[in-house]
Length: 351
Ligand SMILES: *Cc1c(COP(=O)(O)O)cnc(C)c1O
Image (cartoon, rainbow, N blue to C red; front, top):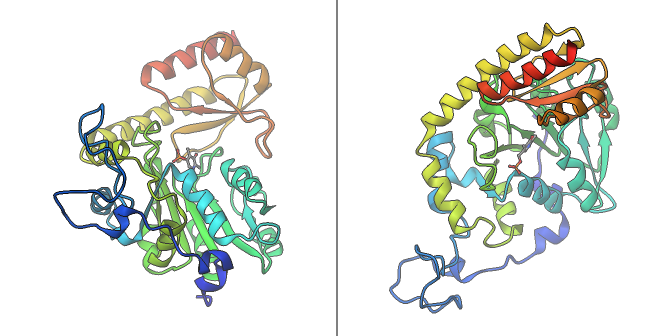
């Protein structure tokens, strides 16, 4: 285990700042008259007390997530999508114009977008042709200003999981934070790294309600990390980042885990069937193994096939200009009927 020193990682201004203290932060007990937050005391045009500010630290929702994920609430940060957590990590740990982060392309686009917004440089260490981490190239790229390493596993857009021993190697040797983005973990054969949080103070895990949970429209992302890290994230976030409707609806959704599990099982089954059917088409060269709810598919002339499918009313993601993804489309697993429509259209293309 390396000597991990969180204080040394945090930007000077963040370490010194006094967080905004809202009315709802300062008084958390129960009272009968609330005249502390300049809310409209008469009510709201909607039922259910929308005139009141939401709980800034989302206690009730975190208790529910804690029970589902098996992790104490103080290790949970909730954001307006995982994207908020990603942006906060930059703002807390990366000094603009000085620090850098490491990403493994091809991967999720938001890491680089957030880096650019925050004027933080990105060191790109491309995955190997087998879509795994190039450890030698990584070692050469890391320097004393490297603060974050983003490991997307299962990776978007390649679909595979990153070898766990490689991630553990980073956790044991990197002095910054290792951010493991598990947006697609529900579909994976590999297990979540949540149990590893007790061992690694430099581990941050991102999950989301946007994919398997079917709540992309609600905007709720989760970060699991050591308590000092979640505290920093709470200090820097907007005070009321998760609105009342999202908190209530997410709490309700978390009680319906069995439909989520059913969809996940069906998606995995459909993924394997679709993969087998796609490989048999003559113009498809590779269907990469997937641990996610999409397939990366290499074919002869992906751009033309993308346009053909769009013309047929079927939209997939063209990844053909992305490194290591020449002539690849990324296809989300749909319902059995949607997948059938996709296959029928593709069979007509080859005919
Ligand atoms: C879809 C996706 C997310 C989800 O982001 P939200 O902001 O929570 O919707 C995060 N990471 C990866 C790799 C994704 O593909």
